[in-house]
Image (cartoon, rainbow, N blue to C red; front, side, top):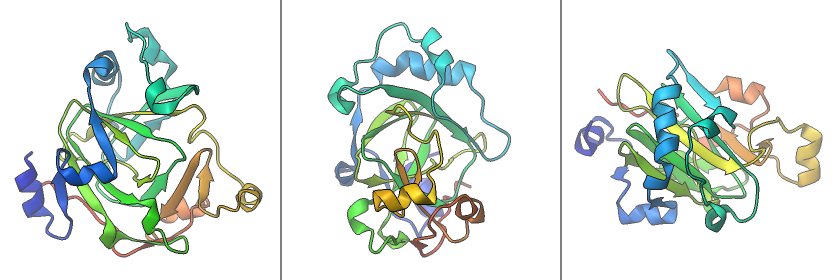
Amino acid sequence: MTLKKLQSLNPKIEILDITDPAFASYGKIIDSFPFADYMNYLDKQTIIPATFNQYIANDTKLWNYIKYPLDLQPIFGDVQLQYGYVNGNNSHLNALEFHPSPEINLALTPLVLMLGLTQDIQDNHYDVQKLKAFFIPANTAVILNATTLHFSPCKVTDEGFKCGVILPYGTNMAFVTEAEKIIAHQPLLFKTNKCLIAHPDNINLINLGAFPGLVGENLMIQYK
């Protein structure tokens, strides 16, 4: 898959290479070498489900395969972290989430991320026309800013995608109640350490308590 082909297949979506200067508003590329053991684990010890996505927030078995400690304090500060992954077949936007912390994504396979900025949320709604999509080649590591809206990667091959995910420990591990949303004065809270805006078409997320605040088409990345 090439960026040029993706762009030709998706005229409604601005798809840029991850090296484009525009990515600086959303995050930055980091050296993937320190994550070599992590990526090898994703390659050899995880599978891509036949349908949908599989998200593991914290895979404790991963540490049996990492030979050298990961020094991520300069990125996250002195907090406990969780080391997981998302593998799957997603092609749609479906929702956008954000956290009060950065997030590291490790693209073992090529994939596309659709990204926005929290500053563009208006009255808990977000216009998908403001999104930018970025093509991430295989074996690329990126940090997403705390102000970056994101959700599941999108596949660019029939085989699907594999992506490591590093976040502060506890993120995505438990649903937030309506009472907790009121106490926090944040109606977009969805899970621990996670705010989420769902597309109205995504009934499953809405039934789980997500706010249906995405305005516009539930965008899809075509790859063939």
